[in-house]
Image 1 (tube, rainbow, N blue to C red):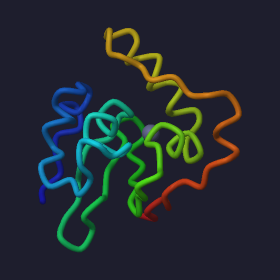
Image 2: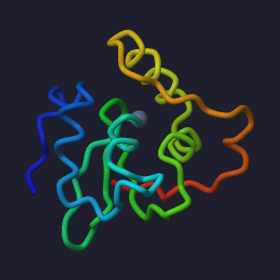
Image 3: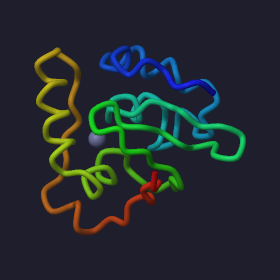
Image 4: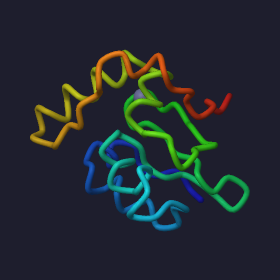
Length: 115
Ligand SMILES: [Zn+2]
């Protein structure tokens, strides 16, 4: 798959559209709506079916598990980015999910893909 224009991915609506072959369903915590809201867009392939990228810091994450939470897990990986992301999302009037305090210490995130 060719990389999407990342400028395009500033909009949650656009990010949401990339999750065409996303392996998690609507009833999963990892539903595409939640992923897009957390700032991710889908860049996966056959060999990497759950690979996503953050539109702000370009970190790529895969190896998601059903019980993962896109917000919490990314916070573990990139606290600064998610804070910035939440701020900019708020400015654009997007709905920003709240993180429970101290939750980040309790989760093991998906592994970060080394470039
Ligand atoms: Zn990021």
